[in-house]
Amino acid sequence: MKNLQKGDKKLLNAWAFYDWANSVYTLTIASAVFPIFYEALFAERDHYIDVFGLHLKNSALISFITAAAFLVVSFISPLLSGIADYVGNKKSFMKFFCYLGALSCMGLYWFDLANIYVGLAFYFLGLLGYWGSLVFYNSYLPDIAFEEQQDRISAKGYSLGYIGSVILLIINLAMIMKPDWFNISGPEPAMKAMRYSFIMVGVWWILFSQYTYYYLPKGSKETTQKLTKDVFFNGFKELKKVWASLQNIIALKRYLGGFFVSSMAVQTVMLVATYFGAQEIQWSSPEESQKGLIICILLIQLVAVVGAVLTSRASEKFGNIPTLIFINAIWAVFCALAYFITLPVHFYVMATVAGFVMGGIQALSRSTYSKLLPETEDTASFFSFYDVAEKIGIVIGMCVYGIIDQITGSPRAAIVILAVFFVTSIFLLRRVPKKAV
Image 1: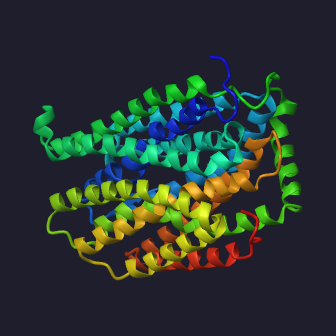
Image 2: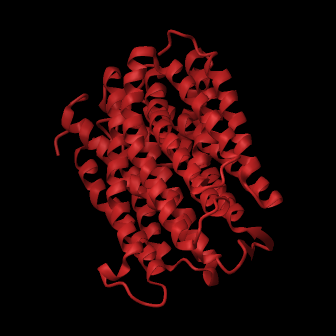
Image 3: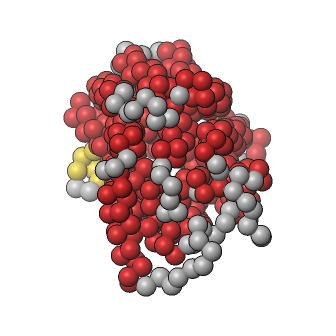
């Protein structure tokens, strides 16, 4: 396929469509079906299991595994992004992680407590594949879109992701709630339907990503170089150069500080919300719990589409940083109030609020960083800083959540700590020069 020019509508749409392809992972695996499936496995174990020589609460265990995966991603992403920009073939790296994640999702079909280590390995690799592919996906934004296009195309990507993932989740929900409609039988048809949904995520992810790969350019350079030992270590050299550049870009450096702290909380809330709802909300029955949790996740996704679009409009009128400060303030109040919720109706209301600000803060954070970048061809190396800040923030957030959950037996206190993170982020974002974005 002949490379399309920067700013071309077809190229922009193809880039944004990858959100449609991969967002089924964040919804079905990270947020909805897998957490419910995982909780159901522990129904007769009082939420605890002996693993890795420790007696761990199930939600704390998955928090620590998630943190470990993000720690690995934060280490390899600067290395791989530096190599990708140097060799000029970041699409191949993006494909590798995409397929790794998709195939690992399919592997979750065999997740059970009797083979807990194999199941956790598939969960670990799925997370690694998803976030690894995003390193290169995000780095394409300044390559394919002009600055004035970036807010809207970033928001469009998230909106497509929410819509696509909701479509698949509705199908999965029908399978889980009415397995007989799909000829799913056996002693536990709902659990079997959940296992089928993991395979569907992998197939969806691989299938729809092909449209993106067809139009995206190979990389930021027209010629390629062989991957030698010197090129391999060039990733570290590029990382050092970016760090040196940041010292002279005050707005970008200060923004990264606020983004880092915000990521500790935002991504942690998104990753643990379903586990929190399953354990802390007073559902009338396990069936109501499964149905209610999936409905809440669907509600979040649908509201997030509106939130992402309205946030991009607000940023055009008020500026990116003031809009991000306002959204972080809403998140802080959200976490403080979450400590007190106990009833399903409370959880539905909080899900609506979370959805509205979730899409906005993700899309705007990505495009704000892109706008603050200096003129450079090494966009992947710069975006690796963005990704490393996000991933290390998640590692800290998930560890804080997991440790408090393990010690107290309840995650409520951890949610309050996340509110402190948002308040800190507001303070840091206020230090970004007012006319930066």
